[in-house]
Amino acid sequence: MQFPACTQPRRQGFDRSRLPDPRAYYATELDALRGHGRSATARCPFHDDQHPSLSVNLDSGAFRCRVPACGSHGRDVLAFHMARYGIGFIAAAKALGAWSPTR
Image 1: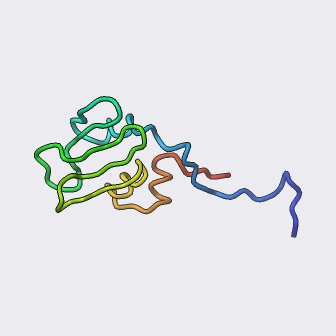
Image 2 (image 1 turned 180 degrees about the vertical axis):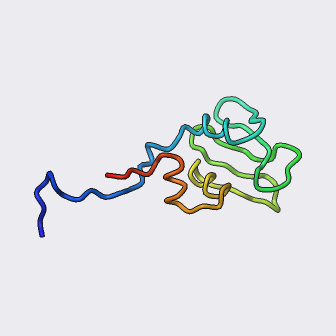
């Protein structure tokens, strides 16, 4: 069945452009974020960390823990949010405001 253009059902979906700015996100999520420019370091929230071992790229949101036993890493703030809170893709996208009820 074909719907007229104005009444077609809209789909829900992920909108990457609505993810928070990595610099602002990490500033609120991580204790003692240090650094300037594109990269910064902080204590890793994925293990008991006494010294900054988590590197974050403040442009892309990518992160990597330099402790071999931990090794947490990801490409963006969405991956960090999923790992930190142990939630799935859709739940994390909704929590970060990147899930559009209509698309």
